[in-house]
Length: 138
Image (tube, rainbow, N blue to C red; front, side, top):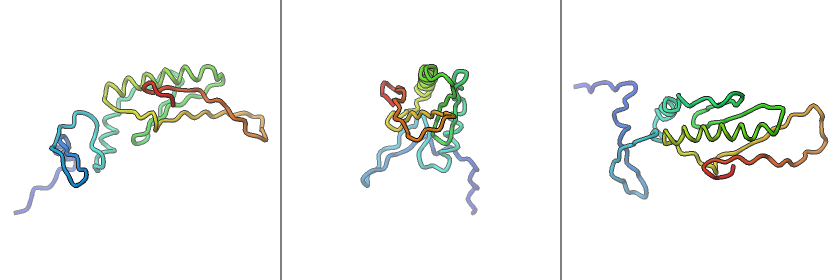
């Protein structure tokens, strides 16, 4: 007797998972949010899970790649950048909290690029603005 062919996207086994550590296996538990790591469907499921991520306010751009999220803004007035990006970060954090997605501030970064037509021979250190995620500075 030939076994029935598997469905192309069989999701029946992903709702309950066990944790394996030090040659010991936990009892299976229900996954209430997120997607299992290491599954062949993980990246597809994560994309579906985050498909409705809200677009930030006007001017702030959102870029997604796998499980990485980037917010960026081009502006000629530096003083406008920090509050606009922080507001967009706060909006994103509310969405992440609603959908139980944990953001690790230690793996987050803020990078400031300054473009000037005047070529400088020396790089000057710059105090980048401080942004906050979950009450932690990034």
